[in-house]
Length: 368
Image 1 (cartoon, rainbow, N blue to C red):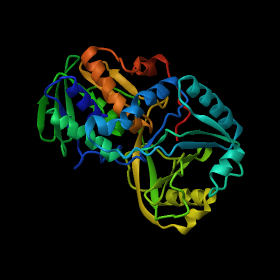
Image 2 (cartoon, helix red, strand yellow):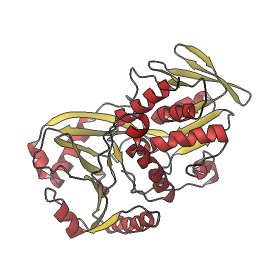
Image 3 (tube, rainbow, N blue to C red):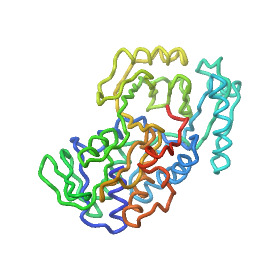
Image 4 (cartoon, rainbow, N blue to C red):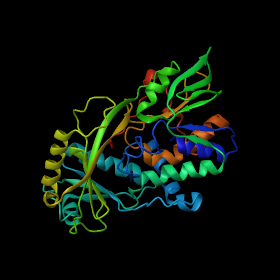
């Protein structure tokens, strides 16, 4: 979000932009630890519209910024194993089709034919969109950073924000581990840490960090090159090709909020057992790598865009696990709001901070 916003602001002609990253390298936070999935398959109109605006930007990334981001359109295949999910999937496909997204519905038998390596006797139905897929997160982050550099954005690593100076109701500086930066405008795009940054300015935002983890396997020659991004929806279990092997993850429904990014070895065993049950072939593989990262979760699983009660302090956060795919358009949207006072590319005005106090929540069903 920060890299995209910095680039789009500079592209519009803004000067004196500073991007701060506390890690040693860019892309080591939530972006670098995500599974890299991008999709059109959402359950709300606003999230679908964000994908309709953002994913084409990823398709055109190399042409626009000169950076290959390895956009592999393997398709997402979501599987419903209970009636509730099946009914919701049907409604979701109808909404997506109405908005111009060519998602198709699949029967249980069609799923079993498409996924011969998997055990889906309990599959009732599913949905598939060929244009969904995976993109390399680091390439996207560095593509924006490098393009922003060319536009004279100053981007720093190993600089931690330790305070935000507010006088009256206006921002006047950002205090960092290397000293203070005078400014009249701050964009808080700190993801899982955005609530902490907001508190420094006296702003409360309902974003909590939740750990999610995944692992990769050694090569599995039986897995076809066109194997889709498969989500066993009820179990929050997913598989997609990673190199010659698989990347496998599952959400821990009992995870407690916190900033721990170490791998929970006990839950990894639970994940592995569930994966083998669905795809017995996984038992033959070795684990190559594993890691954990953080979701930035809001009460309605939708992001927060725009202003706060402190003048000059803006937020772009709370994407609840699907921020990477909406990063391109989100940076552009924030550049529009900061420079023009309105969102033009997509109307996300309903995703403001005030909606939580005013009870205007919009629930997203398709969150894994």
